[in-house]
Image 1 (spheres, rainbow, N blue to C red):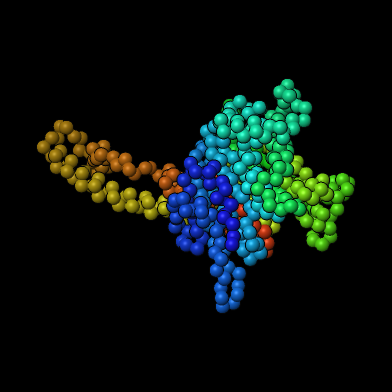
Image 2: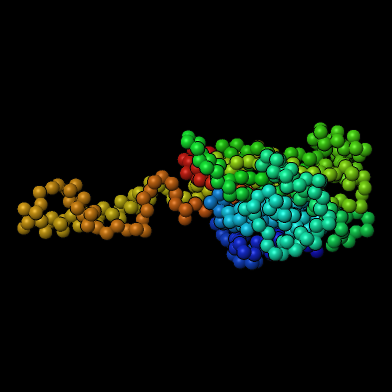
Length: 474
């Protein structure tokens, strides 16, 4: 029997955010609301076609959330067990709104479990708090609530501050401070996993790789001739799990590859006395893992020595040119190249524009059909009234009469002027995010990925320009 889907663990963090479930087995515009969408998140049917004995056809269920920040248009979270190759789901995804009590700021994370999902579950629920505990030391705009303070006080003895005090942090640049924040939080999380909570094996405990992102609404003062950044993206990854940014029509990876395919990581492991087997392409660390960095993995001393919990961090300006960010587990990137994300985004956006936007020409024609008869009727009425009052009128033509009629006709406030851009009601960003998320998982599975699939798609304000482009543009 399969375990509960990964989102069940992080439902507490999402309880205040109503979600909608997009099921690819139904029509693309169909929705299933309510708490049941969380229960079904990442669910794959256990039925196998009896006629041919084929593996079950995946149902790429995706949960979407509206953007509650001026920077974010919509968020889509998708998970699939990849039942053709995997018996259990070991990935966990998490989303936290108003992170650190800061409105407009969010925490997003994907945790790819190995040898069980215990480490991924614990990291998804506790790493956001550990990271926040470090953020409040360098940014007073973040805050902790009582429950978070109690948790941090209980695990404080496992932290390691590396001899840095507040004066040392103040002397650092903002990027250096954020690097220390992520490094300390990941190191602290790794020590907590060493307690072995919820672990059942007496030989080797579970581990996980992780990629996290903090979307910080941090508006900078505008300078003449420049668009000020409207926020910051703080991204960190530990392992062969990545984040890909879509900007100016191109997609590129913003994280480092911590795997045996990385020549530097390969050299580091051999230098530290580790071994890399040759039974797989690029080899496996101690014959077990492709990832060279991660959390947990207690019980195997050689693996613990080689696979370190040191993350890579990058901070990026979040301006109007940033379209979206994709966080994906290792299984996603086994079948999807970072550059392919741009093609998926453009294809989904093109289909989205065609199916879910009203053509401008038809809209204008409909408005003319409704308004012109009323204008003529009103103009004739005004002309009849003007026959006995020649001194009050100057005998204007039809244009003047229509102008007078338009002045007397009450305006329909329900009809907005067409400025060439669709109204917010017409642009269903949640549907676009769900389609991109589902297409990425389908592409990875069809390309031969044999791992669990987890994806978080975050649409930013840069998608507004993509939404109003002509049909032949991308």
